[in-house]
Length: 530
Image 1 (cartoon, rainbow, N blue to C red):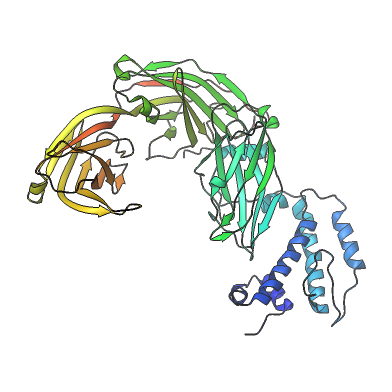
Image 2 (image 1 turned 135 degrees about the vertical axis):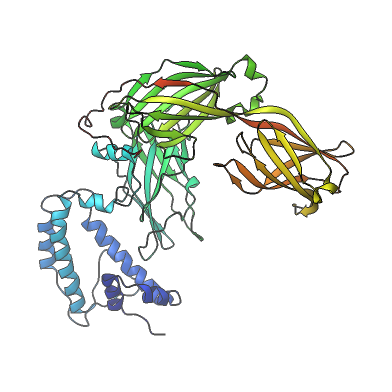
């Protein structure tokens, strides 16, 4: 196996033809070391050439330095003060001449890019490239000059993490992380995002990671909403990333984010509105916060007398509210907790207070400052106790399925069998019921609770396993009866908790006409919902 020369590696880099080189260094440690040395040299040059802010005399000064640089002749050893190589690499005159010419051409090109629009910094920063998911709030933050650059770059074990774009205000914090391997190839979803935390000035964790609206071909875009009220103008982002793909390393970093400039552009509106559903759920509107990158809607739900005894206290916070927003033309511009439409929701949080459950919904945009917007309440689901049951004969299921019907839901139990599942120290016997269900209420096995009782009165917990179709409200899987080791003559299946769905509501709430954020007075709202 013949080793590659530095010249060959450079040519591969210039031509972006790295397949053969990548395969070679997988089994050649010597060439791998040389290649990593070459990449470090390029990185040093890149960092030296492309700083965050370049003076007007930069191009002239670099050209003068290049003209004064001695070019080594053939066979002479060339040393680069930017690094200390283990083995001094040799450069031919033609190679260095090619690099010098390339540098001069690059500087000429960059002279127009750095000071033109879009700027070079915007090209390198990749949260706003053309293939990125449309985010009106982030675009507004960019237009107002609120995108911060912490200039983070950490490398270990052949991987590099860079953070050059952060948007932060009172509604959300968004970070673009660029992860690349030793060949400069972008790696998406290669680390555990839970190892990044957002803290306030007292050191408390205040960020809740929500599923990003998307990534593009170069960066992971992470969006954080906040736990409760945010009282800090300075936030700290900390990384404890110790693994990329399957490789361990240390990619820890920390940087501060200043919200003061965005806070000065933030408007808060007190909301006055109350609604009581026919079945006793109370909605009390609270406030609306408008920041450059989004909108935060807050209200509280509580239980009336006819509802309070039906809802298990520990499950009240697991209610789900469905609503949408309309403009003055009757267009639906965003839906919440409905799967059949586009949504501008970035995330939601809830916390129990002495007044009920306080909800905070964060949106990437809500154009109530340019249009008349109203919130329309569509329905809700909430855990409630139930006494519905069915008695089945496991032996008879082979001949004929048993049907359960209750609260608009139907389920068919088709067969019964015994099995075992492994545990930490020993196997556990289980009974297995094949089940198919068609629901009117919400299909949510994490909330719905079933229990089985055998001939002897012994109780068993039931766990559903299998696929669920949320749109069609359909399931087709298995009921796992934990601990059941024999086939009883009769089995009582009782549904103790149901995620009950209500749509008998009729209420809308007009959002106040908001003020335009300074600097966005002439901004044309993006019709995201279209």
